[in-house]
Amino acid sequence: MSFPWARQYQPATGLTKWLDEKLPVPRLVYNAVGAGYPVPRNLSYFWNFGVLAGFFLTLQIVTGIVLAMHYAANAQVAFATTEHIMRDINWGWLMRYAHANGASFFFIVVYIHIFRGLYYSSYKAPREMIWLLGVVIFLLMMATAFMGYVLPWGQMSFWGAKVITGLFGAIPLVGEPIQVWLLGGFAPDNAALNRFFSLHFLLPFVTLGVVIMHIWALHIPGSSNPTGVEVKSESDTVPFHPYYTAKDGFGLGIALIGYFALVFFLPNYLGHPDNYIEANPLSTPAHIVPEWYFWPFYAILRAFTSDFILPAKLWGVIAMFASILLWFFLPWLDKSPVRSGHYRPLFRKFFWFGLIPTMAVLFYCGGAPAEEPYVMLSQIATAYYFLHFLVILPIVSQIETPEPLPYSITEAVLHSDKKPVLGENTAPAV
Image (tube, rainbow, N blue to C red; front, side):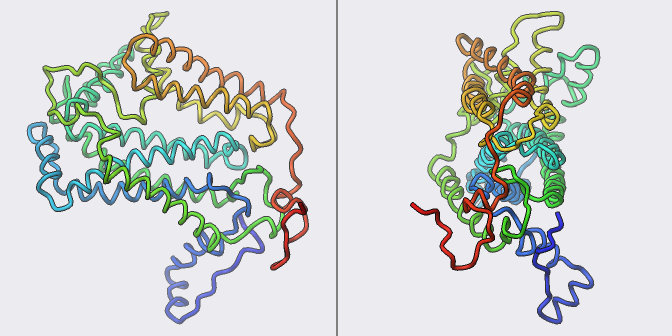
């Protein structure tokens, strides 16, 4: 969005003036993440997670490039080269643990980022494109993470690849040819490992390109905020730098404390012990389970146990993909004129006491064995998940009576709509 009051970039030296004329990168940075980009003054720490996601994406790319220098995508030696990285390469153990746990932290911050967007309806106009690109990023993340999980070529890597690619076999007529085409054969082997390694290396750069478009789309309408009220005047905003660079820096510091605690003290906590056993096509693990960030969708997949018109396996595949694809339609399913969940009492109840517990159950059941009572809990949670987005959300958006909105962001922050004066005490009277 073009704000008339936004600070303009002024080159200070002859070199920066020349660079601004020939290749205005400093101006671009200044206007994108510097003092030239005004943002709402009331952003909470929930708005830090976009920056955190960008940081962990960069971390994954850097550590992934280093690991690729020493990895061999060959079924005969893939497991051995992974151990070689851990044992023989200088700081190889750190690179691998940083990469593996970086993926988990990347998903943690993205999940929080998504649920913040769901609660504050960040998918509503005029920010639909930001949301749609965000869903594309999430799908790319899932594809990249799945292929990366196969590369260590441990037991869970091999059998996870076999199970997930086997899902395509449930598609009538074309399923089996697609499965063979993906694997380069009838079971995971050299061809599959080479393809997955190539795509795992390529897709993060594709993701980075979509992230750039995501940020570009964000700068057109400007950032949303906890009230859902649009910016009306200069008093509603502050420059991104130094206010939010400092705030994001503090949030990044807190995240890195947790991240390095995991890397140095609990590096294998989020992994599966069977993946430290070399892949054996003749020995099936007792409990095949994907990485934790796939668990809710794996629970949805396993929730279908009976054939009804179509085979149960096909219903599971359809539901698993539909559980993410329906996010594309949220801007049109939720017709409420109010964005923020703070001012939508009925929506707020269904979100905190319906959707959040449902996702918690799906996370838990996805990592549990495929037996009762976990299957039944998965079925109930899956039914509510789709009911929430396809039925409850559209109805609630039509029938609820929102609470009164503040006139402006300034009013919400200062409890008045006057322009703040530097040095003036704006705290409310006690």
